[in-house]
Length: 485
Image (tube, rainbow, N blue to C red):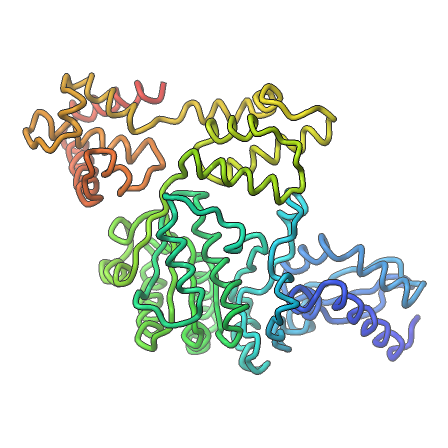
C-alpha cells in the first residue's frame, strides 16, 4: 500500500498533467472538484465527486486517461473508481477559473469534430466568475445551481436567417456585456429552433468579453428544484442571495413553472430584484409571455417588459445553410450537395431532427462503407421521412376548412368579418395551433397578416364552443380526423 505522502504526490502529478492536456476551463469544471479518498485493495484509486451527474460524466470521458496517468506515476494502480461524496469532494468553484486570454479563446469554442464525439464534448460550469474571488464564486457553485454549457453552442456556429435574425441580434447585443435598453430579453419558439443555443452562446461570449461578470444559466425546472431544496432545508435566505447576486440570469423553458405557485412567487421577486439593480435577465419559453398558461398575470406582464423575440420555424435556405455548416464541422466533404438539398426539403420540423438525420446518414455510410446518395438517405431515414410527410401544414388546414364550410379560401384570408367567414377562420386558426408547431405570430401572418392576439382569441373561442356545443365539437373532430389521416 502506498504511503500517504507518496499517494498525494502522485495525485498532484496526475492533476498537473491533466490540466496541461485539457486546459483550464475543462480542468476547473471536471477535474478540480475530484478529491483523493483512498487506495482500495492493492490496485484501485478511489476519487470523491460531489454529484452523481459529475461521477457519470467523469467516468465516461476521463476515466481511461486518469487510469493511464496514474499508472505512469504508480505502476501498481490498474483502476480508478469514483465515490459520490459531496463533503469529501472539492467544491467546483474553490478556485476561480482564470480569465480566458486571447490564446486560450479556442478552449471555449466547439471542436472541429462533429457527431458522437462533439455531442458529448465537455461542458463547463454555467456560473462563470472568471476574475471573482474564490469565496465569492463558490457561493453559487457549491450547491450545483448552474447547468453545464454546451461547447457546441456558440455564436460562431449559429446560422442566421430571416426566422431568427431578431433573436440573434438581440442575443449578440446582450453578449457585449454592456447595459442594454431591453430587460428582460425573452426568446420563444418551438422545440429545436435555437433558443438554448443562443442562451449558451451569450454565456460563452460574456465569459470571454466580460469575465468579471457572474453569469448563471439553468432550466426553470432546476430553478424550481433549488427553491424546493431551500425550503426543505430551511435555507431560503441563502437561495435568495445566490440568485440575486448574479449579473446575468438565464432561465430556459420558463413554461415549466406553470401552476407552481410558490416557485412563481420566488421567481417574481428574484426577477424584480435583478431588474431593479440593472442586472440582465434572459428567459426562454415555447410560447410568448401572453400565451403562458398557468403563469400569473403579473409575471407574464413583467416578462413582456423588455424585448420579446420570436424564433420562427426554419425555411429551406436556412436549413440548407445549417447542413452545410455541419458538414464543414464534421470535416467530411463527401456528402453530395444533392443529399443536403434533399434533407433540407424533407426534414422541416426542427433543427435537431435535421442534424440528427445528417448524423444518421454519415454514420451509416462510415459503418457500412456505402457512398452517400439520395437513395441511401431515403433508405436510412424511412421512419423520419414518413413522420415529416404526415405533418400537417397551415395551408392544408386552410384548404380543408374552406372546403368543409363551403367558403372561398380568399375570403378565409381576407379582412371580412361576416360570421359565415369569421367562424371557419377561427376554426382554421385553432386547428393550426393544435396540429402544427408554428408559433402564434406565424399563424397570424398566414391568415392575412393578423396579430397573434387574434389567434389567441380564436383558440379560446373555439375551445369555449367545443365545451358547450357537442355538434360543433363533432365538426372539429371530423376535421381533425381528415387532416391527420
